[in-house]
Length: 268
Image 1 (cartoon, helix red, strand yellow):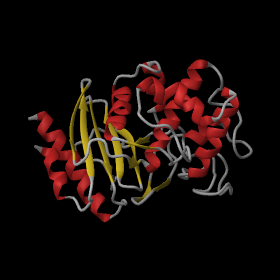
Image 2 (cartoon, rainbow, N blue to C red):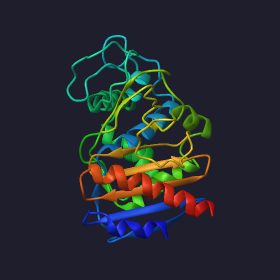
Image 3 (cartoon, one colour):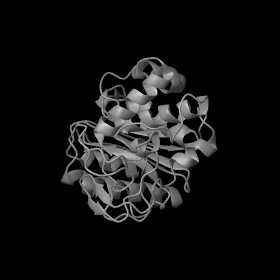
Image 4 (cartoon, rainbow, N blue to C red):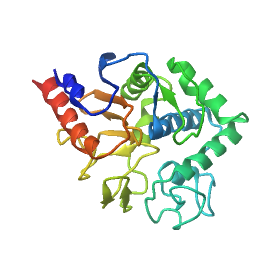
């Protein structure tokens, strides 16, 4: 079985799951272990944004962040904000600059529109309805910690949305501000560096953390804590991974291989 290969990874604890057609096959050392999600947290923040859009409390093109920037710019890492700290490095819509700071600003805008702290709205709009076991206890860019079961619940929602309309998720996983050049963290300059609304889009990027067998429509995110979630809508499958080993060269080799092995196994 493809998932068995994670036993050879250098991480002390690994939890992985394949989610397909509403079911999950999980391989883990400790199913109940809580892992730091790092930047996978941005997927929860993006999902919260989508709920807010459907509730009509805010609009993608309303001003937010640096002058000339909007909610859409912030969600798509196109506001011009630096990766960390609210220094502006470019005009909105000029470059794709992956920005934790942008997600802090985005969360503040969502909280203001919802008239409640962001963590409370996240719980009411997303983690509560999905049945996730934990609450946000840190940055909306990187502060969630949870189990592999939590991640599979999010993956299932992204495969077959219930909290938002399928059309809303489709827009969120469509390229925003096409053609922008930027750096995909740890994988270098990409031309273009395509993103949706919080979701990194595989398209034809190379090198990449997903597999060569993933369809161009694959979307998701990875985290510096050694975590990832990708969803391949063409193949109707998602792959979830949580580890306790910081992202590094080991992941650049192991993650694409696991993706290809899983997809090849499912296709057999």
